[in-house]
Length: 109
Image (cartoon, rainbow, N blue to C red; front, side, top):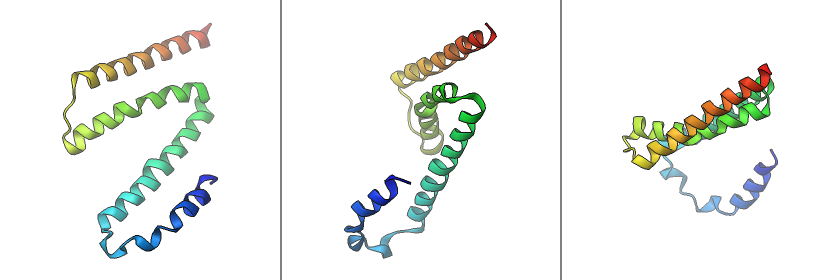
């Protein structure tokens, strides 16, 4: 809510340069998807997770963003996975498992 007026102010002067007839339904769908799904629902889920398991435990899962992005790219647009991406994903998943195990031990102790 803080950034929205600033973004509107910065973008307002460029609105007259947009040829609105060339903005296709696919572009509008992408805007709605990005704003409503990727941002809106994601922040809602994030806040629920913070309430249920706490901010520290929730923040750990922020590291999954590149893994999900890579998987989405493979499934949706057929991107190729490189060895470095596989290694990076393995490190991320290993780190998450390690953190879950350490957190579980801390809670039980």
